[in-house]
Length: 572
Image 1: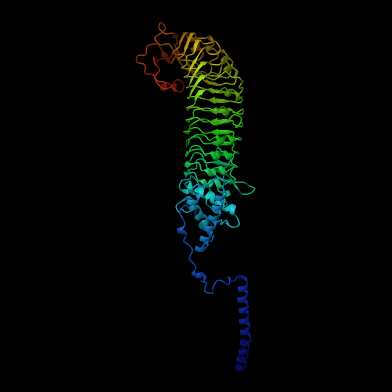
Image 2 (image 1 turned 90 degrees about the vertical axis):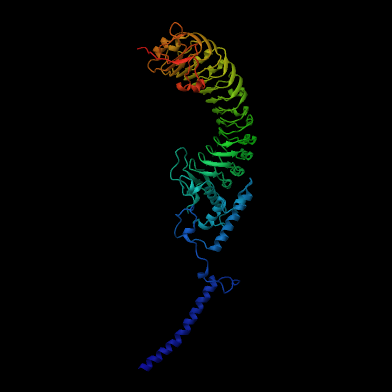
């Protein structure tokens, strides 16, 4: 039996072995047909175990986020080099295709310390999203541009929040969860819901530091850029002119320097342009006349020079213009657009006469031309400005009479004409301004008597007529309906009379009152028991300053000559 069993086993082995060998040969052949390496590669190709090992996690630069998915395979040495080159080629092609030249972008891609190189390296070696440079060139350019922006402006080293930047998520999700306090968009980057194109970069007050990166010009779908209240420096790159879809550009409260590029005239869709509080210099380019959709323009607190180049009939949609605190010298009539509501040219070097076109802006609400070197007369208004509420021309060299037409703008709440050289009498038409709250005519050469026009001006809070050549009695209507008066001055004039009715009318609010009451009832021009400051002709020992009375805004800085604090006695 044993012999028979052994014979049967030998026969089975003889049959099965050839079949197994044949099956193994067939499996190997099938694998070669489906996935074998090309025949040009020699059979001596190294095995998988001989390829370079993956870099350890500790080799990833610290600025890259650590929250990349742990399951994401890191590229090996050779594929990384190929991917880096492919991404770089796509970016360079995008730069070449741009209308505006990239002044330093190409060179910076070769500098391993630059933000641009670091952005390339991050996309090639670390980015878990692995955008395909062959299949999605636009996606590569967009992701690179935002990554380069992140590195160039401090990134995780200075930003107050990462907002998800450099995560494995799509760049459209690199933003906070809630809209910011002053803006409907959350801080970070936001995209069109239709095609995933970045339309908003909103990083107001987010701790950005560094030069303004020109790669932002690659994000040609941008409609809003708000980088205000940061520490950006350098110049405005020419590439910004490729953002032809841009509607809102806010860069105020930074340290951006250099000139405003003439290519900004290509941004014809701009509605809001805020560049105030930077270090921009030179002249305003005439190309800005092309920004015919512009509604808000703010360029204050920049050392801009020359003239305002705005031509008449071009910027017809302007509503708010703030060009205060500059070195500009000439106002162009084109600034007075028919839709203009707010104009602020204060604290500058403007000179010459006020253009009569001022009164063509019939929608004006507020005008501030204060603290300049304007001369000549204040032109009579040829049009009624029904919405005008604030009119400031103080601290200039204006002369002549105050125009009677001031009283035609019946919505006026503030008239500031102090520290000029106005002559003539106070126009009686001011009595029509029943909404008037503040009338400051101090430090002029106004003469004649003060008209009795104050009965209907019930909301007056400030009435300063001091340091003029006014004479005559105190008009009775000054004591009527004085419910809100907080400061009242007729000091350093030649007015006479008794302030008792005014004291009685204002005893509830007890305003600061200044008059020529120094020396007592027998020696002073004004009798005033409720005056806080009395002035006279004797200047000896006078050390009272405008600052100590919080009056420097209207009186100017310095000593109030021949004026002294006195004890007040309000009527019971």
